[in-house]
Length: 392
Image (cartoon, rainbow, N blue to C red; front, side, top):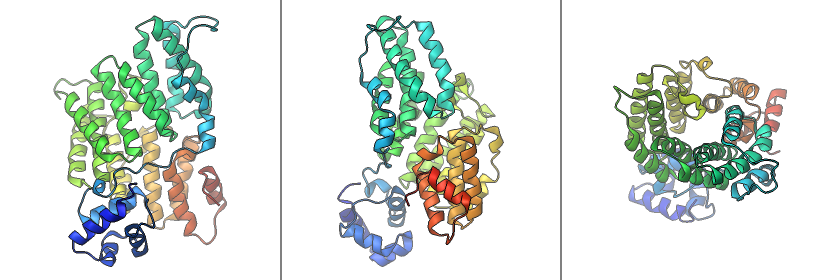
């Protein structure tokens, strides 16, 4: 968050002819927080709060904030993944290896690792990933065919590092993946994850520009588009919509979502092109993201209405799209004081993805809201508070 947030907030508020109290009433942000921000006593606030202020002031969120990153992983989490960080930075040689990696061997090892990524099996990935990164580096030095394998592995690693809030390592992996991309289709797939990283780092303008550029680049002819082309284009539009709604550009967000829906309709069903779980896409995926946009826009009633019509049983319990959607549902339930229902929703996520949930700052925020509003906690609430690392 820029140190000039308070100055910008005060200047725009005055240009709109609003008092601090009037801005508080329009935005739902407390008067005391607005005063602290304008006086420089607080130089940071949540992106959600900045978006509400921007919406009340009728300006893009990026007029108030230049960048607002999610909280990065703590030291313990960083240490846990230190071997992966080392492997990303290393320039290994075949010296000391029992045998040189082969193209077929590395390709098969990568295929075997993909289900670990798709299932959020972080413990196993911590063991498997460092030697696989080493082997693909050594292979690519000797065999040009290894470049495509390396791009794919680096894309997956960047996705994993983003998932676990190790944003610098994610940026390194995804930049290297782009350098290795062997064609436009592979590059566009990597861009989808890069846009997600930018969103999590609060770099909304960059995410919007990158997603918009690549969506234009890869827009297919609908009459002859392949499932892979429709999925890639659709996901770029979903990233554009996500950036736009967070930047208080609802019209742009809706336009991108409408185009993504057209790609989903052309597919006709949920599809995983080329068995790439990162590009699983279809009508349900678009509906999930429409619900997410409603949550970002502060419409918990609309979230629950939309969610009631989405057939989640078509998605795997380990689907990050499904679980992110369920967090939106839990957030809406908590805001509407449906605390028991919110806890039940958390239990569904925990059952399907026990290693995913503890890495979600969003989950911690939602559960913190539930805990703060309850005089007593049920055993389930206490257990979930421990799972997501809610501070005592």
